[in-house]
Amino acid sequence: MNQGISTIEISALPNLYPGYVHFSLRSLVPASRCPCALRLEAYHSASQRLRLVMAQEAGARLDGAWLARLLQAGIHHAYIQQDDLDRLEEYLRVQAARLALASDSDTELQHCLVYEQALCAIKSAMLEPRNGRRLAQGVATVRQIIEQIWRDDGARQGLLKVMTSDGRLAKHCLNVCLLGVGLARGLGWPSQRAENLGVALFFHDLGLAGQDSESRDCSPELPDDAHPALRQHPKLSRDFLGQVPDLAPEVLDTVLNHHENLDGSGYPRGLDGQGLSPASRLARVVDFYESSTAGRGCCPALTPFEALSLMRREMKAKLDQDLLEGLVRFLGHG
Ligand SMILES: [Fe+2]
Ligand SMILES: [Fe+2]
Image (tube, rainbow, N blue to C red):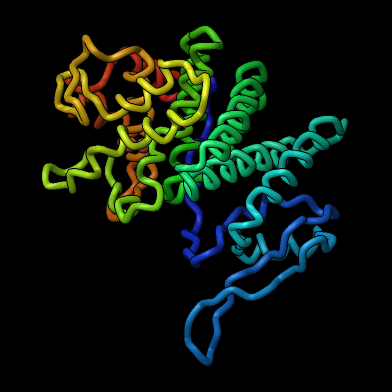
């Protein structure tokens, strides 16, 4: 099943600039008109610091040769103003739909567009986690993507191939969602159950958004001396997502329990295996795997093989080993 999928591509870590968000240049379509102004990082010799410089005005036509030169030079990210996130998401949605209809379309570009669109949705949600309308929009976006990857083998595998990881929270949430839904598909779960799982995973760490803890949530295991607020982030994520009307209770249950362990050593409630649904167990497995292989913050990234070995040995009593073996097969390491 899905032999040989490479799930993680490490790229340079983009800097953070207040009021701006970065996105991947590979998701821009040559000859299209990008709806927002693009900025790139440049070294300013007078101040001896990196800063953002205008690269393209809003609405200007994107030159394919210019884009190719940037990517070849190792420049993978551009920056837009936070207020432009909705416009960029709409651009990515329209371009992905257009490519899906074209007979000679570049499928990798199409998957990059869908991946980046989903990232826009989770970044928007994280900017305003108390804004229920924004969260509802994010739920609608992720449901569309889950539906697409559920029925389309190519999209499911293609999205795993374009997945990148730089340790940032938004990518972590999206990657965990894609891995979880792909694994559920491989295990033969019914589509409705997998959709609820996917929505839960997309938002599972919303409670860490904007917290200083985002950079400190570097390990799939919190140290014993971790700040108590960190251990409450599943509750906070559940409360934020609870603003969205008509979500199935199991979505909120999975969000709340994504750090619980089978042996009762997890948090926030210390439930044991009897209290944990299959979706919560699966969430714990894919969340641990993605965090381990992404190398967040101070923790070095493990290879997929190292992470899976650790999960089989040292996490044996905590993680559902049947689901873990399902993940091993899904990733093609079986
Ligand atoms: Fe978490
Ligand atoms: Fe997580």
